[in-house]
Amino acid sequence: MLMPDRNRFDVSCESLCTALRWKGQFISAEHDDSVPPTNDGIFWCMHTQSCLGPDGELAEPGNCGAGRKCHGTGRCG
Image (cartoon, rainbow, N blue to C red; front, side):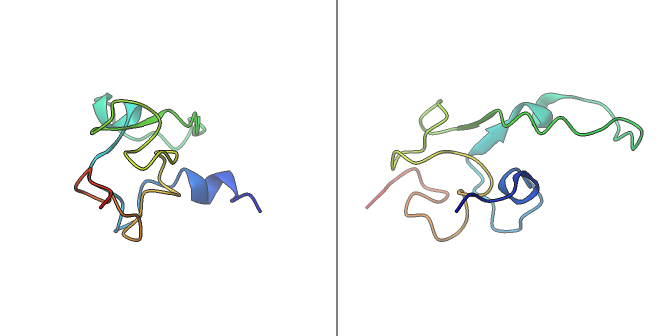
């Protein structure tokens, strides 16, 4: 079953991997409630520099939590 986009792309999770990156981190602008979120889903792993983590799974907020083997370290073992 697929996760709804609002959960899949939610970057406010406390256990989010510190190696996860997204373009919103690099935009210096204040939040504007009148602008709808794009939820563009452009995420990448700092360790692999791709949309896949070291374990071959998607690098996105819904997947990059504390339960993942590579979480925070980039190592899968």
